[in-house]
Image (cartoon, rainbow, N blue to C red):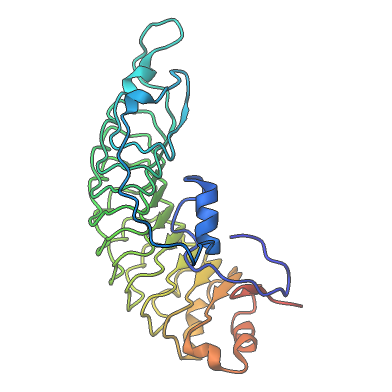
Length: 312
């Protein structure tokens, strides 16, 4: 989260971690966040872009970080060229450690069989409908699949080294098939169709959980996620803060845009002695004239309420 000046209210961005911070086109994301859209511009009638053939793209055989953002790629193929070393001999594995094919026209995850050593894969803003063909990526640490058309979390069992998984802005309706991801520390599944908190019991190393902009009604199913430091369940349908008193390592708690109306609910956060930031705005509680004061009294460790730091 960006650093804020003390006492200076700032406009809050609820969907903070819908996408990983490393991927994609910075200018495109900046315009999207700032709302830089020409209101007078007529609706686009430009036909859908035609994908380009990867044969037209030059790949450096010695490159470890391959950036193919905004190349209008419709199908990943031809990565075998990266097997060639300088002496025109062949090596056993391709050296790519990071591949970014964000903002393209991909409909399937394919053509990546040779990437057995890859650590970071970015497939943000494509047209991918299913998670598949990743079994060989046994060293993968980060997977970014945000802003696609995925409906089911599946085929991740072999990714036992995965530490960060980004699935924001898809069409996922259920948290499932995550049991094998024992090393996962960051899970972002914002702006989907989740209605129930479940399927996280094996993610015992999870530190950051982002679930804003879904349809969740009850906080539950977090009994084994005791290492959580960030919990984002903003913009859901939650009426009560409950079942999180065991999350003693929490530092960030984002619960804005829900239906919380009982000050006693804050007792659930009292065991988190290092809690620094709480977002509760746009809940019924905010109508209380003593809103900020009551949060400070209930949670004395907090240094930031909503988008404003506390003055001392």
